[in-house]
Image (cartoon, rainbow, N blue to C red; front, side, top):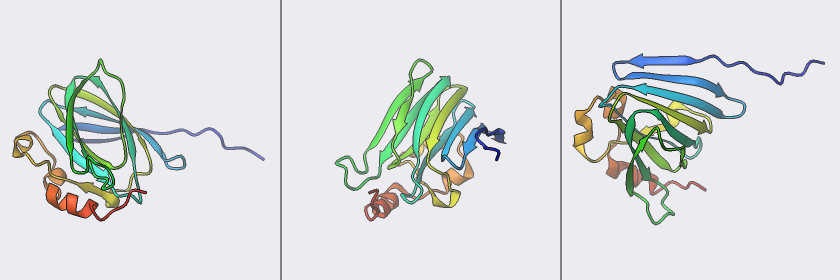
Length: 165
């Protein structure tokens, strides 16, 4: 009997005018993936969240460049429900944990290499894109998918009826 304990993973790359996203590896059995975003200056990505039946915790890290990172608390049981947090990140910082009940996005201030470890299976049909309330961010390069997101008030209404437990 032969045991299959070693796995080989191949990278998958997705490229557009904003840069590229690389799935370094994705282990569907363990529900863990390592992804890397190589993004040009002046690009906004997000805000993204997966619904509770496919939650994803993200560990994010900037390898090169600088970003403003944005997260929105979408767990109705928390005191900070609906609060938007933003903070600068660069290559001198470590990893930051983004729990599954936070929507996440970032704005690049320079050519940036951004890495994230995801715990939990990705399912595109369970991902929600939420528009950031300030239209200023949308003067940057943004994907069509991100421009078609739901408004923040719609997201808050939706997530006020959802339990993360």
